[in-house]
Length: 420
Image 1 (cartoon, helix red, strand yellow):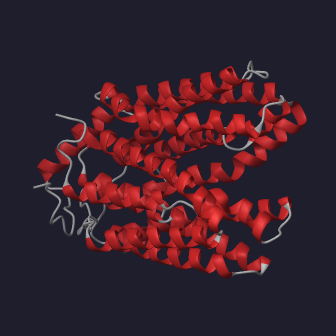
Image 2: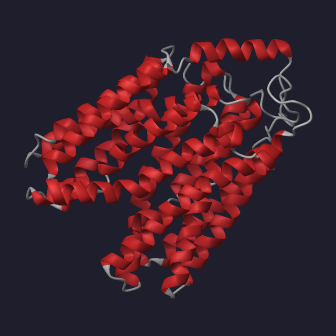
Image 3: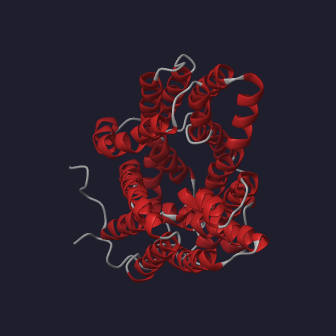
């Protein structure tokens, strides 16, 4: 079987929508520049407004997970994309500070809300034995699109900032149309009688059954720690490199290795790691995070050492991101997949909000060496935690087969997903 084989047609429509969406990721990377250069905001005011995006992402992940289980995956994705496109367009013409902050909050929520539904669709369509491969392919699309969008956005900004809003809104709207017209609704039509008594409808249960799953909460907490490390590469790393006398251009070249490595190596790495247990992969990814940021503590003014660190923790990211999503899918009952992914996504979004604050405080008060040593320690602790958690996908595969034999719930509409 090839890396691209035996995946349903519905997955490839989802993959295409992800690529289109990421190809139009113009606004967020340039939002700070837009606010300071075009709207005249101070750096502090711009930072506070941009932080509203992270806060919105935290809320959007939980709401998106809830809606995908209550209303359906397709309507959640399509509706979120349409609302986000409208908010993006409104940001281009809004001048009031409070209104811009509110729209940025909604922009973050709308951008985050489709993700639990998207992960739930992959979990619904793809069996446990192929989920890590499917999530890896989707993550590959994310990075291809984001890498190309950064280049295109640079040309658009030269013409006028308004074009990044128009382009982002247009591609987001296109994602909504793909989701509504081509992606099948996969939400289970009936409750899993083996897990839920008939007297208690699944939709009325809210997050309570999810929050009682100690393994999910532990996985979310450890993932929060690792994503805190990842965001240091985007927030405190450029500051630390500048303090060592390295230019912003050098940082740009160093951090560009992140996207380049993902695009070039995600497919062969996934093929090479196929068949390994989730727990082993998550522990190994944690150690790579620890090594990558640990190396940075010895970089000084050597750009090559910073680059080496980025390459190492990027490989950890490539293993961790799809494997953790697949592990959450294996943990979740079919009727709660959206909420499970939403709670897990809450931890990821919270890290994007908290990482710049925590990293900045440590860097200012203790210096870069302490910051990178602390990052290495967090990575090592995460690796130990994954060993203790024993996230075993082989057990999940056996459980899924037993549920199939017993007659587990089927999706409401899987037409067009056979890949024929």
